[in-house]
Length: 179
Ligand code: HQG
Image 1 (tube, protein in one colour):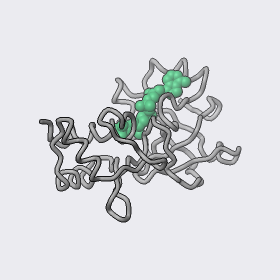
Image 2: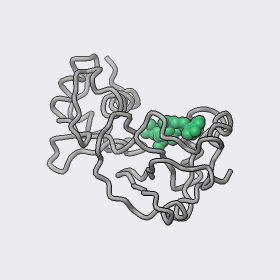
Image 3: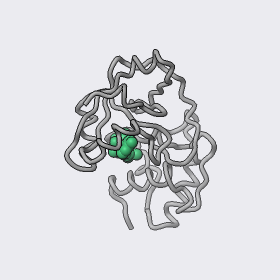
Image 4: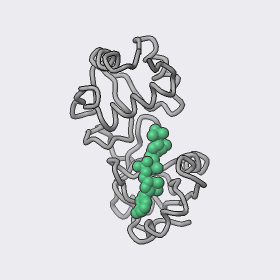
């Protein structure tokens, strides 16, 4: 049985962002799933998660990746989905500059095609250089790109801010990127 925090957080990311079907779950169109069915499905698949443990993982999560619904009955991931869900985020004006953490090896392709959302629903941008460094570091030596987000916004591109502070947009053309 796997029941430590990091394991459970990774498991929740998998089922609430990418592959709910691995434990027989179905997310609704806004990405929510009932807490009861999540716990039942998890426990049937080798993850011993009590309601108390789930609360701890959600409230003490380093990036606040998950949220309970206002009625306390459902849970969803705040961002990072590859499955098609509508998070019902309102477009907002971004700051002048946001940052994207990546690695050297991707730069040539980024310079040719811009920042693509790849498998996820959005391109992810960070509010600080430090956060972007940490995002890049997941893959190797981090490289931080600055994105002229206010200029993009003025040119008609939409931005969304997830419940846990990650900036999201559809695509970033290379002309807005400074390395
Ligand atoms: C790269 C984590 C080649 C892009 C983080 C990135 C984040 C290109 C990778 C969240 C490219 C996609 C998302 C192009 C983009 N050519 N490579 N044209 N355009 N890329 O994981 O931003 O811990 O889907 O630079 O904190 O790394 O999971 O996106 O390296 O917020 O909660 O393609 O995941 O959050 O990788 O990370 P990802 P990301 P969690």
